[in-house]
Length: 366
Image (cartoon, rainbow, N blue to C red):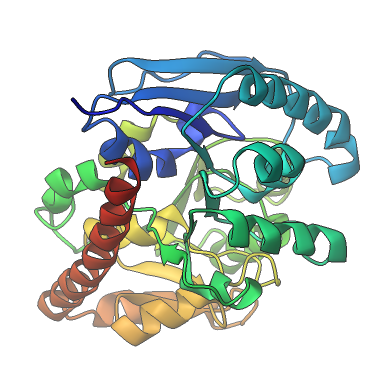
């Protein structure tokens, strides 16, 4: 008779904002494991319903804006630690999956003392690594984990050289059932519809994008996602400058992106090209490949390098005066049959690496 593992997944935000948890849940739920999931309901609003049965949810409910200084988050972080620590100490979990470095650092003493080589670290953002002590703790977490998964291979240069680091990908496997939602419609679009989905942040680069296509009748720019200070400031900027071809649609449920992907010609996947963001891989990178939609990425970023190398999008700089003309020329020069072949090729590569990662998880829990 198979031993039933007791597993805790530690998330650091709302369920709706953690699509990467599916990388683990899709494997863990294939066996009779007792799965616990701690998450942080930061806006104190209703959560999505998970498509998995018998997950034991532990909600940490505390309002916390994301777009505030790190100092203003300290009290909330301490409360989260207290809640998670109690859960870890009151249960003897066979495996803990820490789905961000920040909760890993907050709980490092508990993980090192009670769960060494019994936890998986999911590394998906550069956060406080410029702080020496923080970076030292992250390195120890990697070395003491049974496995560490990075969401971008560019993160490896910030981590110790060890043989337990593997690559996960932010691709949503159920999206593969909807691959043709865009290519079954005409690619001739007037105006060209540029679309962003996700948490709206990075005000300066978005303001440059908006100004670059402002009231240019060749384009529409659409934003879908959480709106805090950055989005509100961008809306005011559009109102002040009477910009009529930029639209904000508000928050959405994960499955709704299928509907607006149908009406997208170019994916806005442009972020500030700073040290924290430059190596990251956004979820939209995978959506672009899956749905055969070309994407725009920042010149010099890891994603920009990837789309240029694989001919699946345009690496660009919104501050260039020729930005709008470059987008228009690029879109109208795409050889669609070749573009779709390139998407298929890159997707196969990603799925092979994704499968290798899932095999590692299965080996850990079998």
